[in-house]
Image 1 (cartoon, rainbow, N blue to C red):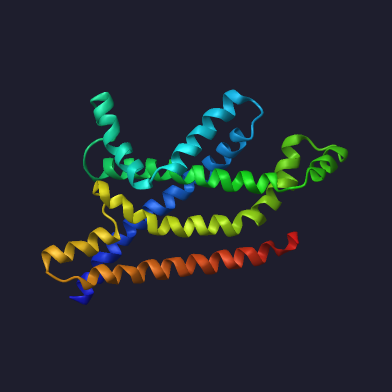
Image 2 (cartoon, rainbow, N blue to C red):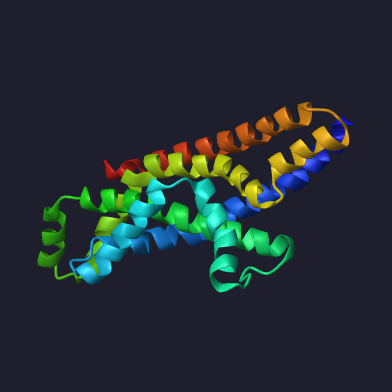
Length: 218
């Protein structure tokens, strides 16, 4: 039974890992874009982004998942996500990407605005363009400063992936809970915690190593 449970949870963990990885792939660059738009001096650009970030950060991710999956069907009378597991996963991914990109945007913005303006001026004196200053001087320092808060959000994402089960996306907790009905045992549900702990531990060590590599920005 232990081997059967472990294999089932590993299968569920692959779904968790897939949702986690794809969320990062899309949310990290989108978050940077939102941060730059939020800092724009043009109200037509910054105001809608600020409203989006305010709305996303002020409502539960669970609610956003439900709205993302069921909302289009009620509004447009058409399930834009399609049927089956693929459709549910796509809706969950969209909700996670939008949610985490807004949180990442605030982290990026805080990191960018923490850089002294004198460094921009020094770049201009050296004859660098605005884009060159940002990519060659500012952004590298921003990465150093945002690693701790970003690592916290990413580790939180590991655990938040379990919320996808509310729209029947198969992930590790879904598989663990299934044994309650099928076999009448509950320990597989607690066993899922080991997967989260190990994965979060590996991420913690990876971020610690990254912080040490970025110590040259002291």
